[in-house]
Length: 407
Image (cartoon, rainbow, N blue to C red; front, side, top):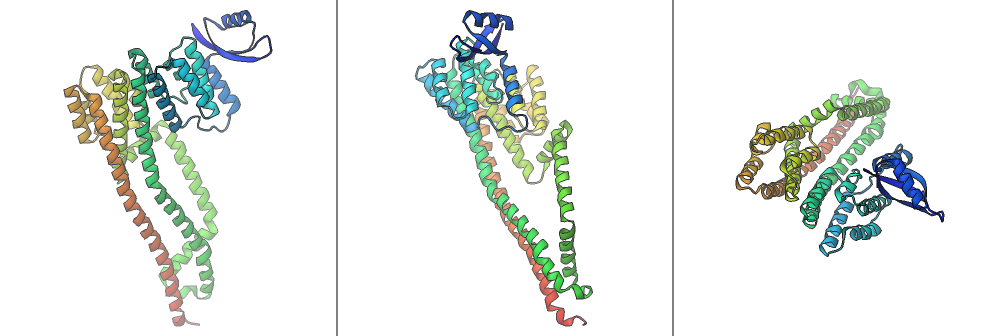
Protein backbone atom coordinates (compact mmCIF):
# COMPACT_ATOMS: atom_id res chain seq x y z
CA UNK A 1 0.00 0.00 0.00
CA UNK A 2 1.21 3.50 -0.83
CA UNK A 3 -0.15 7.03 -0.55
CA UNK A 4 -0.95 8.68 -3.88
CA UNK A 5 -1.56 12.37 -4.35
CA UNK A 6 -4.27 13.18 -6.87
CA UNK A 7 -5.64 16.17 -8.68
CA UNK A 8 -9.14 15.71 -10.16
CA UNK A 9 -12.24 17.56 -11.33
CA UNK A 10 -15.59 16.84 -9.66
CA UNK A 11 -19.02 16.83 -11.31
CA UNK A 12 -19.28 20.62 -10.94
CA UNK A 13 -15.92 21.18 -12.64
CA UNK A 14 -14.17 22.18 -9.40
CA UNK A 15 -10.55 21.11 -8.99
CA UNK A 16 -9.97 18.95 -5.92
CA UNK A 17 -6.72 17.58 -4.51
CA UNK A 18 -6.00 15.00 -1.87
CA UNK A 19 -4.28 11.80 -0.85
CA UNK A 20 -5.55 8.24 -1.28
CA UNK A 21 -3.97 5.08 0.07
CA UNK A 22 -4.03 2.33 -2.55
CA UNK A 23 -2.05 -0.61 -3.89
CA UNK A 24 -1.61 0.81 -7.40
CA UNK A 25 -2.43 3.83 -9.51
CA UNK A 26 -5.36 1.99 -11.16
CA UNK A 27 -7.02 1.63 -7.76
CA UNK A 28 -6.81 5.38 -7.27
CA UNK A 29 -8.48 5.91 -10.65
CA UNK A 30 -11.35 3.59 -9.69
CA UNK A 31 -11.80 5.33 -6.34
CA UNK A 32 -11.97 8.71 -8.04
CA UNK A 33 -14.52 7.45 -10.56
CA UNK A 34 -16.61 6.13 -7.69
CA UNK A 35 -16.44 9.57 -6.12
CA UNK A 36 -17.69 11.10 -9.38
CA UNK A 37 -14.37 12.76 -10.18
CA UNK A 38 -12.26 12.81 -13.32
CA UNK A 39 -8.56 12.25 -12.50
CA UNK A 40 -6.19 14.85 -13.89
CA UNK A 41 -2.94 13.83 -12.21
CA UNK A 42 -1.94 10.95 -9.94
CA UNK A 43 1.55 10.63 -8.53
CA UNK A 44 3.52 9.59 -5.49
CA UNK A 45 4.41 12.55 -3.21
CA UNK A 46 8.09 12.43 -4.14
CA UNK A 47 7.26 12.37 -7.87
CA UNK A 48 5.07 15.41 -7.45
CA UNK A 49 7.74 17.37 -5.67
CA UNK A 50 10.30 16.46 -8.32
CA UNK A 51 7.96 17.42 -11.13
CA UNK A 52 7.15 20.76 -9.54
CA UNK A 53 10.83 21.53 -9.10
CA UNK A 54 11.55 20.71 -12.74
CA UNK A 55 8.60 22.63 -14.10
CA UNK A 56 8.74 25.75 -11.97
CA UNK A 57 12.39 26.15 -11.01
CA UNK A 58 14.66 24.86 -13.77
CA UNK A 59 17.40 27.42 -13.26
CA UNK A 60 17.00 29.27 -9.99
CA UNK A 61 15.40 28.36 -6.70
CA UNK A 62 14.69 30.34 -3.60
CA UNK A 63 14.78 29.05 -0.09
CA UNK A 64 11.37 27.54 0.65
CA UNK A 65 11.14 28.02 4.40
CA UNK A 66 13.53 29.90 6.64
CA UNK A 67 14.67 28.51 9.95
CA UNK A 68 12.80 31.34 11.67
CA UNK A 69 9.53 30.21 10.02
CA UNK A 70 10.19 26.62 11.05
CA UNK A 71 10.89 27.75 14.61
CA UNK A 72 7.65 29.70 14.77
CA UNK A 73 5.67 26.77 13.38
CA UNK A 74 7.22 24.39 15.93
CA UNK A 75 6.40 26.66 18.85
CA UNK A 76 2.82 27.20 17.72
CA UNK A 77 2.22 23.49 17.07
CA UNK A 78 3.54 22.63 20.54
CA UNK A 79 1.25 25.26 22.08
CA UNK A 80 -1.84 24.02 20.25
CA UNK A 81 -1.20 20.36 21.10
CA UNK A 82 -0.54 21.25 24.73
CA UNK A 83 -3.90 23.06 24.76
CA UNK A 84 -5.62 19.80 23.84
CA UNK A 85 -6.38 20.44 20.16
CA UNK A 86 -6.24 17.43 17.81
CA UNK A 87 -3.28 17.20 15.45
CA UNK A 88 -5.30 17.65 12.27
CA UNK A 89 -7.08 20.74 13.56
CA UNK A 90 -3.77 22.20 14.76
CA UNK A 91 -2.20 21.66 11.35
CA UNK A 92 -5.25 23.18 9.67
CA UNK A 93 -5.03 26.31 11.80
CA UNK A 94 -1.29 26.68 11.25
CA UNK A 95 -1.74 26.13 7.54
CA UNK A 96 -4.11 29.09 7.40
CA UNK A 97 -1.65 31.23 9.36
CA UNK A 98 1.50 30.14 7.51
CA UNK A 99 3.41 32.74 5.51
CA UNK A 100 4.76 31.81 2.10
CA UNK A 101 3.14 29.83 -0.68
CA UNK A 102 5.53 26.87 -0.45
CA UNK A 103 5.07 26.41 3.29
CA UNK A 104 1.29 26.72 3.00
CA UNK A 105 1.18 24.06 0.28
CA UNK A 106 3.44 21.76 2.27
CA UNK A 107 1.28 22.05 5.39
CA UNK A 108 -1.83 21.39 3.31
CA UNK A 109 -0.29 18.23 1.89
CA UNK A 110 0.82 17.10 5.35
CA UNK A 111 -2.68 17.70 6.72
CA UNK A 112 -4.21 15.56 3.97
CA UNK A 113 -1.72 12.77 4.62
CA UNK A 114 -2.38 12.84 8.37
CA UNK A 115 -6.15 12.73 7.84
CA UNK A 116 -5.60 9.78 5.50
CA UNK A 117 -3.99 7.89 8.38
CA UNK A 118 -0.33 8.58 7.73
CA UNK A 119 1.98 9.50 10.58
CA UNK A 120 3.14 13.09 10.99
CA UNK A 121 6.81 12.08 10.73
CA UNK A 122 6.24 10.20 7.46
CA UNK A 123 4.25 13.12 6.06
CA UNK A 124 6.97 15.59 6.97
CA UNK A 125 9.63 13.26 5.59
CA UNK A 126 8.15 13.78 2.12
CA UNK A 127 9.15 17.46 2.39
CA UNK A 128 12.85 17.10 3.15
CA UNK A 129 13.57 20.53 1.67
CA UNK A 130 11.54 22.04 4.55
CA UNK A 131 11.84 19.59 7.44
CA UNK A 132 15.40 18.33 7.98
CA UNK A 133 16.21 14.74 8.89
CA UNK A 134 16.81 15.70 12.52
CA UNK A 135 13.34 17.24 12.73
CA UNK A 136 11.61 14.21 11.20
CA UNK A 137 13.44 11.72 13.43
CA UNK A 138 12.50 13.58 16.58
CA UNK A 139 8.87 13.81 15.49
CA UNK A 140 8.88 10.07 14.81
CA UNK A 141 10.29 9.39 18.29
CA UNK A 142 7.70 11.71 19.85
CA UNK A 143 4.87 9.89 18.09
CA UNK A 144 6.20 6.50 19.16
CA UNK A 145 6.61 7.55 22.80
CA UNK A 146 3.47 9.70 23.04
CA UNK A 147 5.49 12.77 24.05
CA UNK A 148 4.85 14.97 21.03
CA UNK A 149 4.48 18.20 23.01
CA UNK A 150 7.79 17.69 24.82
CA UNK A 151 9.60 16.80 21.60
CA UNK A 152 8.29 19.91 19.90
CA UNK A 153 9.54 22.04 22.80
CA UNK A 154 12.98 20.40 22.51
CA UNK A 155 12.94 21.11 18.79
CA UNK A 156 11.99 24.74 19.38
CA UNK A 157 14.83 25.13 21.88
CA UNK A 158 17.26 23.49 19.46
CA UNK A 159 16.23 25.69 16.52
CA UNK A 160 16.32 28.80 18.67
CA UNK A 161 19.82 28.05 19.98
CA UNK A 162 21.12 27.27 16.50
CA UNK A 163 19.58 30.42 15.04
CA UNK A 164 20.91 32.60 17.87
CA UNK A 165 24.45 31.30 17.43
CA UNK A 166 24.40 31.83 13.65
CA UNK A 167 23.02 35.35 14.03
CA UNK A 168 25.67 36.16 16.62
CA UNK A 169 28.44 35.10 14.23
CA UNK A 170 26.88 36.95 11.28
CA UNK A 171 26.49 40.13 13.30
CA UNK A 172 30.10 39.97 14.47
CA UNK A 173 31.39 39.55 10.90
CA UNK A 174 29.35 42.33 9.26
CA UNK A 175 31.69 45.19 10.16
CA UNK A 176 34.94 43.39 9.15
CA UNK A 177 33.39 42.43 5.81
CA UNK A 178 32.28 46.01 5.17
CA UNK A 179 35.75 47.19 6.13
CA UNK A 180 37.40 44.72 3.76
CA UNK A 181 35.13 45.81 0.90
CA UNK A 182 35.71 49.50 1.54
CA UNK A 183 39.46 48.98 1.81
CA UNK A 184 39.58 47.05 -1.45
CA UNK A 185 37.60 49.69 -3.34
CA UNK A 186 39.71 52.51 -1.87
CA UNK A 187 42.99 50.86 -2.85
CA UNK A 188 41.75 50.13 -6.38
CA UNK A 189 40.72 53.78 -6.82
CA UNK A 190 44.07 54.89 -5.41
CA UNK A 191 46.19 52.75 -7.74
CA UNK A 192 44.02 53.01 -10.86
CA UNK A 193 42.99 56.69 -10.79
CA UNK A 194 45.14 58.67 -8.35
CA UNK A 195 48.66 57.30 -8.84
CA UNK A 196 48.54 57.49 -12.68
CA UNK A 197 47.93 61.24 -12.43
CA UNK A 198 51.13 61.61 -10.42
CA UNK A 199 53.05 59.31 -12.75
CA UNK A 200 52.35 61.64 -15.70
CA UNK A 201 54.09 64.40 -13.77
CA UNK A 202 57.23 62.29 -13.44
CA UNK A 203 57.26 60.53 -16.83
CA UNK A 204 60.01 62.77 -18.20
CA UNK A 205 62.26 62.13 -15.20
CA UNK A 206 61.33 58.52 -14.47
CA UNK A 207 64.89 57.22 -14.31
CA UNK A 208 65.85 59.50 -11.46
CA UNK A 209 62.78 58.77 -9.31
CA UNK A 210 63.23 57.17 -5.87
CA UNK A 211 63.01 53.39 -5.82
CA UNK A 212 59.82 53.36 -3.75
CA UNK A 213 58.12 55.71 -6.21
CA UNK A 214 59.12 53.52 -9.14
CA UNK A 215 57.66 50.42 -7.47
CA UNK A 216 54.35 52.15 -6.73
CA UNK A 217 54.07 53.55 -10.26
CA UNK A 218 54.91 50.20 -11.87
CA UNK A 219 52.32 48.45 -9.74
CA UNK A 220 49.75 51.09 -10.68
CA UNK A 221 50.60 50.68 -14.38
CA UNK A 222 50.20 46.93 -14.10
CA UNK A 223 46.73 47.29 -12.57
CA UNK A 224 45.72 49.87 -15.16
CA UNK A 225 46.90 47.88 -18.18
CA UNK A 226 46.30 44.31 -17.05
CA UNK A 227 43.63 44.76 -14.41
CA UNK A 228 40.96 43.06 -16.51
CA UNK A 229 43.25 40.07 -17.02
CA UNK A 230 43.89 39.85 -13.29
CA UNK A 231 40.15 40.07 -12.66
CA UNK A 232 39.44 37.26 -15.12
CA UNK A 233 42.21 35.16 -13.58
CA UNK A 234 40.76 35.76 -10.11
CA UNK A 235 37.27 34.79 -11.28
CA UNK A 236 38.62 31.65 -12.98
CA UNK A 237 40.51 30.72 -9.82
CA UNK A 238 37.36 31.28 -7.73
CA UNK A 239 35.25 29.13 -10.07
CA UNK A 240 37.89 26.40 -10.05
CA UNK A 241 38.10 26.53 -6.26
CA UNK A 242 34.31 26.24 -5.92
CA UNK A 243 34.22 23.35 -8.37
CA UNK A 244 37.01 21.56 -6.51
CA UNK A 245 35.31 22.26 -3.17
CA UNK A 246 32.17 20.51 -4.40
CA UNK A 247 34.05 17.29 -5.13
CA UNK A 248 34.38 14.77 -2.25
CA UNK A 249 38.17 15.07 -2.12
CA UNK A 250 38.05 18.84 -2.34
CA UNK A 251 35.46 19.11 0.42
CA UNK A 252 37.56 16.87 2.65
CA UNK A 253 40.69 18.93 2.03
CA UNK A 254 38.83 22.17 2.70
CA UNK A 255 37.40 20.78 5.94
CA UNK A 256 40.89 19.66 6.99
CA UNK A 257 42.27 23.10 6.17
CA UNK A 258 39.57 24.89 8.19
CA UNK A 259 40.23 22.68 11.19
CA UNK A 260 43.98 23.39 11.06
CA UNK A 261 43.83 27.03 9.99
CA UNK A 262 45.61 29.53 12.19
CA UNK A 263 43.19 31.48 14.40
CA UNK A 264 40.07 30.13 12.65
CA UNK A 265 40.69 26.41 13.25
CA UNK A 266 39.88 26.66 16.94
CA UNK A 267 36.66 28.55 16.15
CA UNK A 268 35.54 25.88 13.66
CA UNK A 269 36.30 23.10 16.14
CA UNK A 270 34.26 24.78 18.89
CA UNK A 271 31.37 25.55 16.54
CA UNK A 272 31.14 21.95 15.31
CA UNK A 273 31.45 20.62 18.87
CA UNK A 274 28.54 22.82 19.93
CA UNK A 275 26.46 21.68 16.93
CA UNK A 276 27.26 18.01 17.56
CA UNK A 277 26.43 18.21 21.26
CA UNK A 278 23.24 20.24 20.79
CA UNK A 279 21.90 17.96 18.07
CA UNK A 280 22.69 14.73 19.88
CA UNK A 281 21.24 16.08 23.13
CA UNK A 282 18.01 17.10 21.40
CA UNK A 283 17.66 13.69 19.76
CA UNK A 284 18.30 11.78 22.99
CA UNK A 285 15.86 13.98 24.90
CA UNK A 286 13.31 13.34 22.19
CA UNK A 287 13.58 9.59 22.75
CA UNK A 288 15.66 8.68 19.70
CA UNK A 289 17.98 5.69 20.38
CA UNK A 290 21.69 6.52 20.58
CA UNK A 291 22.73 4.61 17.44
CA UNK A 292 20.00 6.19 15.34
CA UNK A 293 20.77 9.59 16.86
CA UNK A 294 24.45 9.30 15.93
CA UNK A 295 23.46 8.45 12.38
CA UNK A 296 21.33 11.58 12.21
CA UNK A 297 24.04 13.75 13.75
CA UNK A 298 26.49 12.46 11.15
CA UNK A 299 24.35 14.07 8.47
CA UNK A 300 23.95 17.33 10.40
CA UNK A 301 27.62 18.05 11.14
CA UNK A 302 29.04 20.21 8.36
CA UNK A 303 32.70 19.14 8.58
CA UNK A 304 33.31 15.85 6.76
CA UNK A 305 36.23 14.83 8.96
CA UNK A 306 34.03 15.14 12.02
CA UNK A 307 31.20 13.32 10.24
CA UNK A 308 33.58 10.49 9.37
CA UNK A 309 34.73 10.31 12.98
CA UNK A 310 31.11 10.11 14.17
CA UNK A 311 30.54 7.22 11.75
CA UNK A 312 33.43 5.34 13.36
CA UNK A 313 32.06 6.16 16.80
CA UNK A 314 28.73 4.69 15.77
CA UNK A 315 30.47 1.39 14.99
CA UNK A 316 32.23 1.40 18.36
CA UNK A 317 28.99 2.13 20.22
CA UNK A 318 27.28 -0.71 18.38
CA UNK A 319 30.05 -2.98 19.70
CA UNK A 320 29.12 -1.97 23.25
CA UNK A 321 31.91 0.52 23.86
CA UNK A 322 31.44 4.01 25.18
CA UNK A 323 31.31 7.18 23.14
CA UNK A 324 33.86 9.41 24.90
CA UNK A 325 36.92 7.26 24.19
CA UNK A 326 36.34 6.94 20.41
CA UNK A 327 35.70 10.68 20.27
CA UNK A 328 39.04 11.27 21.95
CA UNK A 329 40.84 8.93 19.56
CA UNK A 330 39.65 10.99 16.61
CA UNK A 331 41.63 13.96 17.92
CA UNK A 332 39.01 16.39 16.62
CA UNK A 333 37.10 17.25 19.78
CA UNK A 334 38.27 19.52 22.65
CA UNK A 335 39.47 17.71 25.80
CA UNK A 336 36.93 19.46 28.05
CA UNK A 337 34.04 18.26 25.90
CA UNK A 338 35.39 14.70 26.02
CA UNK A 339 35.64 14.76 29.81
CA UNK A 340 32.10 16.12 30.19
CA UNK A 341 30.71 13.48 27.81
CA UNK A 342 32.55 10.74 29.75
CA UNK A 343 30.97 12.00 32.98
CA UNK A 344 27.55 11.99 31.31
CA UNK A 345 28.01 8.36 30.25
CA UNK A 346 29.14 7.30 33.73
CA UNK A 347 26.22 9.01 35.46
CA UNK A 348 23.61 7.98 32.89
CA UNK A 349 22.78 11.61 32.10
CA UNK A 350 24.34 11.89 28.66
CA UNK A 351 21.62 14.09 27.19
CA UNK A 352 21.88 16.64 30.00
CA UNK A 353 25.67 16.71 29.87
CA UNK A 354 25.61 17.15 26.10
CA UNK A 355 23.30 20.11 26.58
CA UNK A 356 25.84 21.56 29.03
CA UNK A 357 28.63 21.02 26.48
CA UNK A 358 26.57 22.73 23.78
CA UNK A 359 25.83 25.71 26.02
CA UNK A 360 29.47 26.05 27.07
CA UNK A 361 30.83 25.94 23.53
CA UNK A 362 28.11 28.27 22.29
CA UNK A 363 29.53 30.86 24.65
CA UNK A 364 33.08 29.92 23.62
CA UNK A 365 32.19 30.46 19.95
CA UNK A 366 30.76 33.89 20.77
CA UNK A 367 33.82 34.86 22.81
CA UNK A 368 36.23 33.56 20.16
CA UNK A 369 34.35 35.37 17.41
CA UNK A 370 34.48 38.63 19.35
CA UNK A 371 38.23 38.19 19.96
CA UNK A 372 38.88 37.50 16.28
CA UNK A 373 36.84 40.49 15.12
CA UNK A 374 38.51 42.72 17.70
CA UNK A 375 41.87 41.64 16.24
CA UNK A 376 40.74 41.72 12.63
CA UNK A 377 39.33 45.24 12.63
CA UNK A 378 42.53 47.07 13.74
CA UNK A 379 44.62 44.77 11.55
CA UNK A 380 42.59 45.75 8.49
CA UNK A 381 42.72 49.44 9.37
CA UNK A 382 46.47 49.21 10.01
CA UNK A 383 47.06 47.33 6.74
CA UNK A 384 45.07 49.81 4.69
CA UNK A 385 46.78 52.74 6.40
CA UNK A 386 50.18 51.17 5.74
CA UNK A 387 49.49 50.77 2.02
CA UNK A 388 48.11 54.29 1.69
CA UNK A 389 51.05 55.62 3.70
CA UNK A 390 53.55 53.91 1.38
CA UNK A 391 51.84 55.44 -1.65
CA UNK A 392 51.74 58.92 -0.12
CA UNK A 393 55.36 58.76 1.05
CA UNK A 394 56.54 57.53 -2.36
CA UNK A 395 54.78 60.43 -4.09
CA UNK A 396 56.12 62.95 -1.59
CA UNK A 397 59.66 61.61 -1.96
CA UNK A 398 59.40 62.11 -5.70
CA UNK A 399 58.06 65.64 -5.30
CA UNK A 400 60.69 66.61 -2.75
CA UNK A 401 63.47 65.23 -4.92
CA UNK A 402 62.37 67.08 -8.07
CA UNK A 403 64.72 69.96 -7.30
CA UNK A 404 67.66 67.51 -7.26
CA UNK A 405 66.78 65.95 -10.65
CA UNK A 406 68.94 66.86 -13.67
CA UNK A 407 67.13 68.86 -16.37
